[in-house]
Image (cartoon, rainbow, N blue to C red; front, side, top):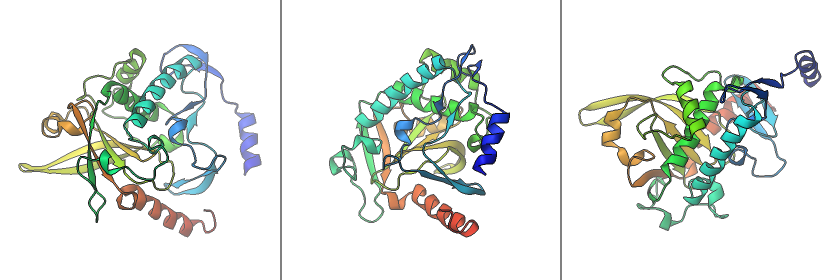
Length: 283
């Protein structure tokens, strides 16, 4: 199979020159990670990820997803600058595992409401978050995920997202109002299995006194952080839940859960079971 793939690549070489999807100018393409490599690297250096799901046979990868024909070197420079600022902000506020200085869980002092002994559910109220850096970072990942031609991202719906507007915001360093594609963060408060997950799209029901509100959202995962990016038109949610949205309040409210009680853990278990059943010995 590997030999056949190499032959296909020789017969259909990847174009090295083309139009940058971000800047709209011709140039030399750069290798561009969809989700930054710093947030999608194996814990053990040199180890491989197991990629599976959506009915595909599991394969092993040395790195996460990247696109050779998305942006030019200049465009990648814009994205890299946004990535560096965003990752530094995440580490500063202990929102990703690499910001924990080697600890295996958040400290009690990191919580406003300590984790429940049974569920492991706790609440953080984070001061001093640079909402502009974080929003620009997450919106840029959403843009990359919807603009790339990589098959692992092809199932994501694009309707309702103005990719041209997002691209312009990224180039201009404009994170927009917090109500434009609002961003909510959930955190895994204990270190679990290191893995990659491509973005997914979900529908969720939020109960209120006046009834249930149904909302769609993109779900991004990276190094213990779960990011929900909601549709543009949800002013009612902004009014009721402003502290949950990045930039919506002076303090950012983040729900943290222990790994064993998260959706990530359940999805990993289910994926292992399904892949082992369909392809015995592949994992």
